[in-house]
Each structure stands twice: as structure tokens, then as C-alpha cells.
Length: 171
Image (cartoon, rainbow, N blue to C red; front, side, top):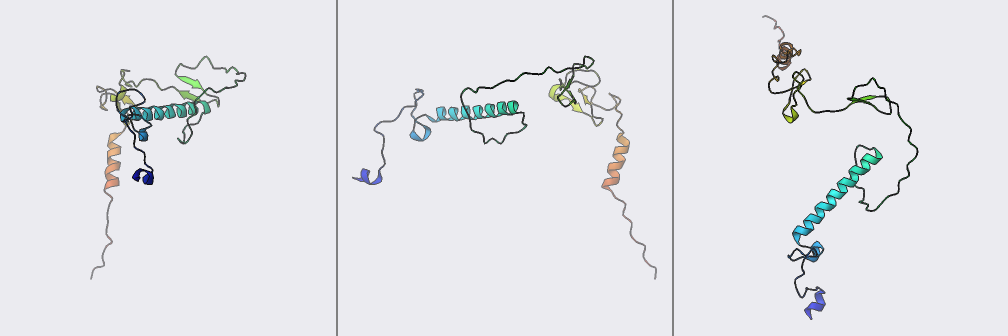
């Protein structure tokens, strides 16, 4: 009689996970165990990120709002005739001409500006704007053109302004 009043139904037996992993599932986790449910959520998030990044690449936009629904299935894409682009032969391998006529430099591996050694994430940026390895990171090692003396004087002058009081009238 109490069962009819609350209209709650308790399962007669524990429900096994629908992925047959051997653990028990619940209706709150779509009849999956907590581990399988967490894996499903992670896969859905990764699919959402992958589809949004693919959409960004296809559409050419730089950012996504993250509110697009995940669409699964095949899409028919009509491709029109492609016009060949002329690229000048005198350009180096590191430059590319885009549609607007601008030249863009490809970002290659980080190398020391003095010895051309690959530095990766351990490179040191100097105030002169170049990247150096551990050996050439000091200004005297790479003949840095940056004027540290003038920069230091300017920093001291900015931090310590000259304070002059008005002269007082003598009595």
C-alpha cells in the first residue's frame, strides 16, 4: 500500500552495467557503472572538441562558441573548380603567399640565433628579440646589440622621480 502512494519502484535485482564490465549500474548513469559512464562522457567531450575544430578548419573561423550541437553522420560537400595559384619561384621555403598577397613565415623549430642549435622549450629570449641556447644566452656571448646601460638608467629614472620643494620665503 505504501508503494502505491509514493509511486517509487525499486528494482528486484541489481542491474549489471550494459558494457558487461562486471560492475553494477544505475538508472542515473544510463545503466552503466560509474567508470563506464565517465568514459562515455569523456568520449563525447572529445568528439565535440574534434567536430568544433574540424568546423573551424572547414569554415575558416578562428574561434568557436562551443554551443554547436554534435552532428554525427556523413555530409555531402559539393566542390567547385579550383583555380591554380601561381607562386613565385624566387621565394624561400619558409615563406608562403596567401590569397591576399601577404607573405607569411612558417614557424619552424626553435633554434639558437648564434649556433643554430635546436633549443625547443629551453630556449632563452633576449631583450634584443632573438632566441638563444644555454651557452649563448648571456649578452656578452652573442654580442647583443641591446643597450642595457641606457635601459637601466631609464628604469632608475622612472622609479625615482626628482622631487623638488618650492623655496620658502625667508622671514
